[in-house]
Image 1 (cartoon, rainbow, N blue to C red):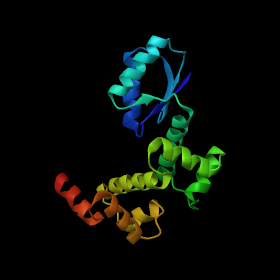
Image 2: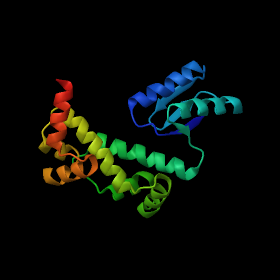
Image 3: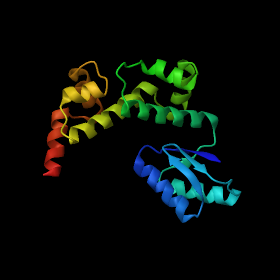
Length: 179
């Protein structure tokens, strides 16, 4: 039995869900970002308890088909920025091929469920990844290249728009907090 879960975005999220499953003594074969594969069907009261425990830590079981698709798009976008390719595809082309659906439909569903479009969501993901790379002391040129920005200036402009500070201000802030 596969259960899609909303708001799982990192390995710590996976660990948190595994802890709930272990505590509830629910056997599972795999927990990954966005879903859980259980070894058996849950009784209605178990499913309700599982969903309640998930909600306490900011997750929830997805019931609606559109919500499931929006979560799958979010997971796909995370995967896209975490495993860049040599030949970057346009996001719209990549998502259309991945889901075998028209991009206009994917975009419409995502905007309806998330309240923002795919492009804005992807920019936020990239800026979060850029912050991570900055904290690892990578150069802005390396970061721009890894995140497939056309230039350091383009990345810097988006970074400032999202965070309110320049990448160098952010880097100084990180260094002050680490030192």
